[in-house]
Each structure stands twice: as structure tokens, then as C-alpha cells.
Image (tube, rainbow, N blue to C red; front, side, top):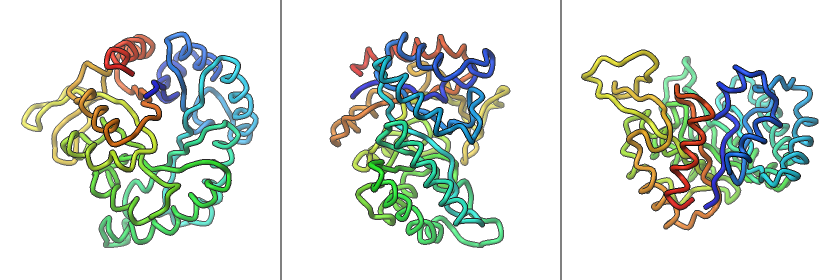
Length: 285
């Protein structure tokens, strides 16, 4: 596996310094990452939505010169949106951005929550969303882009739910972005979850978390899991996620693409990335 980094990992740094994407790419290359993935280009570094295509083409050229591979493009999505036609049109435009970047993977959300006025569970949501996601991945396939969703966003964060969604879409161009840290948000056992997810892997996020039992009083900034426990993102190697074991499971399942570091903790942004990079290199990435 090669080692990449998500531009999302630079969120705090970009906010504090008002830097542009070139600076993020330069720091990523300087630290030693092999590749980089970008998240919604209009969300960071002052890129206006109407300039996304221009920014994508610029980044493709800049990263090529720097020797930094563009691994993936990550976007928000809601396949239970009321304006589904509008959402699908927006997501097809996102596929076009991924293609312009030269990214072979586009990750999108499934849905953040069930519709409040519908009394149904995730199985009903899978039935409703699967043909819509299939339609998008068929378009993406025509542009040379694979699509995937992530165990992310509470409603589709459980390994069994994501598996059922991917099985429901049933298309070779659609798979799983496995985030090994996110499983803790729904109190899933990380190793069991990764074992379920590994055969479907299209991409991989490496994230680490601190953990406190729900019997404790959490400090400020901790996330409450579905089961009432608490987590906080931290530097890879500093938390309780069994990163090495998870990577081994995914590798044994045949995955040999990128592992991307995704940092969203409280620690100093750049130092956290340097430390996380050094730790992951020690694991053989």
C-alpha cells in the first residue's frame, strides 16, 4: 500500500493561515506522502464553487509536477434528498471534477439520516437509494471514475448497513471507502467491522481515536457514540484503534491501493501529520 493524505487533514491549518491548495500539496510532499485526496473543492482555501473545474485542472497539473498522485475526490451527498434530480445532477458534476483531477476514485455519502416524515429503517432506505447510487456509478464508469461510500454519518456507519447498501447497488464500479476510525462512532468492534468491509474496499482512511466509557464524564470536544460512549480523534498511533491489525486484514483481502491519513484531532495540525506519517511508515506503508 502507498501512503496518502486527505486535504481535510489540513482544515485547521488552512483556516488559520488562509493558505491555498498549492501550499497543502507542497507540505504533503515535503512530509513524504505519496499521494493526496481532495474534499469538496469549494469548501477549502477560498475556491468558489463556480471555479471548481478550473481549480481541478490546476491541481492536476501542479500535483503532476510535484510528483504527488491525486488519489481520490471526496464529496457530500444525500440519496434521500427531497430534490433527488437536483442532487444527482450535482453529483454528476462532482464526477466531472474527479475526472478532471485525474482521480480514479470518488467517495460520496449515502445519507446522513432517514427522512423525519418517513417511518422506516435503513433497510427501506437501501431499497430506495440503491438504484440512484447505481445510476450515478454508471455515469462515473463512463468517465473512468469508480465511486464508493464510507462508513460515515451515523445512519450508514455500521458495517452491516454499508455492506447491505453495496450489495443492494450490486455494481462492480461501486465499493467501500473503509474508515477504520469511524466504526467506533457506532460502537462497532473495529476488527470485526474491517473484516466485513475488507472484500469491498476501493479506498482506505487511517484515523485514530481516544476513547472513554459512557460511565465517565467526557471533557470538552468529545463525540458521543450511538451507545453513549465517547471518542475524540487524535494522531495515528496515539489512540486505541488497532491500526496495524486493521491494515493487515485489508491487505490480506487483496487491497493494495492507498491508505490515506485523515486527521481531525485537536493537536497541532502539521505536527500531527508529521507524527502520523512517521508512525504509519513504521508499520510498513
